Image 1: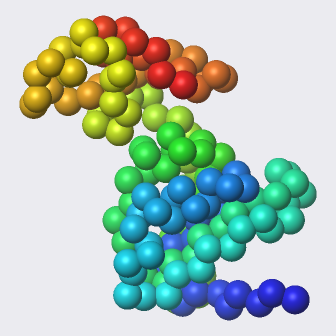
Image 2 (image 1 turned 30 degrees about the vertical axis):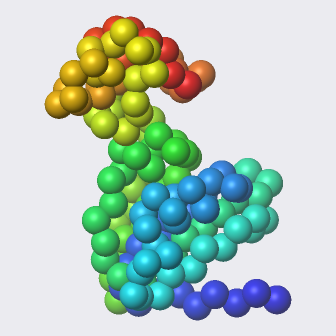
Length: 139
């Protein structure tokens, strides 16, 4: 049986859709971490069938907006002295900036260099976003 110890101080990213754990691991550059990190994939889950979990034995800054965009079902637990200090349930962000890039070649963000790529959520169920400038759709 696989045994992953609890962490004393750090972050647990739980309820990650199976397969998305590696995306998050790479996005957070955890392969370069100089502290203990566990990426546990395809764990049995009553709610999701299978899920991924990431345990980070360190306090790090995490952009919850991006994680919510990757997987809106994620739960983040902040651990202090082996106890959960705070639990954060992620959701799809209403707006994102410089996370999604507009693919419309006529969009001002494709022509001008210093304009931020801004998208707003139009449909939570289909996870559809639209460009603030040209209304190009992104799912």
